[in-house]
Length: 433
Length: 191
Image (cartoon, rainbow over all chains, first blue to last red):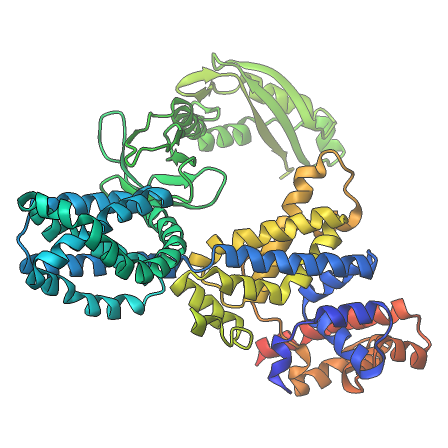
């Protein structure tokens, strides 16, 4: 038998053709066989049989497109995450490489911070402005000092190699270069203000022209990359954001292990550990967490912006009393003792045998058998009503009742140690010797 | 990114799943779901009996997969999806159930599936056991089953050959198959 058949699934064309009666012989058989083998296919077929195939086919095309776009739109978080981390890593490496070759200045740090803010702020317009500002002061140091420039630009090829591997390289390059370029220029700007002012007009133009061609293409790419990478940044930030931790304790502050922490409306959740601590990643900050534990009141809490949610569970009075009631019920049953003859059952039985007067009528008629009486023993131990449950006649019933009524005393039944009224069955046997 | 989307279509479901769990690439789930979207839609049509409602249900089911599949260890995707989809439809019906009259077909089906993802098996795989069991079946069931499974005829052909009505043929084959399965499983257990 071909094992491939096991994995098979009807195509939408097969379903449609089968329903329209276009399949015959082996083809129809194959479809029918699949229907028998897999209830999924079978139920789907039943569904399509209810509707016009033309309509459902267009519906289906629409659905497939929606599925495809839905999954592409948010495609590959992982790659964006990876890209974001790569960006940050490369930025860090570049800064680290560049720092020793230049005098560490406070400008560098502040600029670096600015860049990060810029990236986080996710504002395309802002970032462009910052970049233009940064690019302009570049000319002076190119002209004035060739050595720092060479040093400064040395890491550049290396950086390109690194970032080109990455789709979002350009934005990285700009981020890195903005941190680097201004540093020497900032120094020089302070020392040689005048020179800059003089040189400004002529040289700035020249150099900017040099810069702009590579920059403009980079800027275009960067606009795209920025919009993507900012998305990625917020996403990666969200990942860390959406962790909620906390400790679950009881009223006295003792940690409660094994408390169920669920996201409301889902079956997604965790249990608190032996220290009462829990860690939960949320899909959504607006989630409500439900804390529940046997014997404690269930608590629901909105997460909101909090990262830490410590919870104190209160004892559920209702739940506890439930438990107590059950235990009482058990002790009730245990504490009930039925009525017994005061001298014990054995003595009572021999009394009945000893004192029994066989009625003359019964002897004459050769009657034998037993009389069963239902005797009420009052709470005081006295004998109440006597009812004949099984009669023998010929004076036997009366004799049995006389025996019980005039017989040895009874001890009343007790419930929780308290004497209560109860009923016992007494069997008196009449057996002629 | 390219090397993932390439040859996505030929990979088995489970390979795509594992890859999704490793990379979180939603396109993989999209591709996987589209393999069965026609079944899911048909299923929703069957239960919800409404095209718009069924389409909404399909998309809701699809959206739910991203999260579910991240941590669920799914052995056999198609069966798992069947369970997820059917349970979703039943939940929808329950929600609406208070106002609408539930008809018999829904009532009898209102059994939630358990997440046992078995591969659907073809009982006819074990020929020895099958032959023994076939002989124990009722004549009409036996006849239909033999024609269907051994001669590989379609329902319609069986119907014309046996002069049983088409519906009868269907029910003979379905019931016969069930009896056959029970019998074969018994034989396996006895061994």
